[in-house]
Length: 168
Image 1 (tube, rainbow, N blue to C red):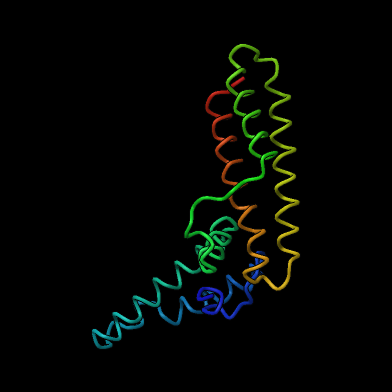
Image 2 (cartoon, one colour):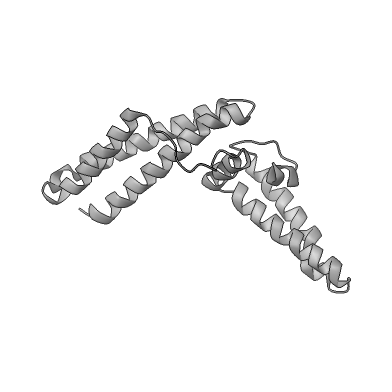
């Protein structure tokens, strides 16, 4: 995977962030465009391109959600943006959506729903930890990560919906 290779890091859901930052800063110094002001236009363009790539690679690898999306994309698992979700998960989504829309009629259930969302978030964290334990992080193990990724997208949508329409 290009970004991991760029920083000479193993492909991982949780890379060593201090080492990532250290290697990012090192490459930032190496390719900083100001160091190439007297160089040829071709060398300046190459330095600018390398600097931009370095910034993008760091931005992606430094954020867990972006990193997961990047890994899945590199394995070609996001080409088909549809993921067949388990029926029990889809039922959970329906229940949460209905509960959020019912808050207008029964605001007293706000705390309970908020606690349910926190519990759900903890379940997702446990699922991510499980995905991180699957080594090596190859395409077969990345399929578990894909399911987590789509569940998290659904969760974030529900959470956003809750925060917009469920003000106490």
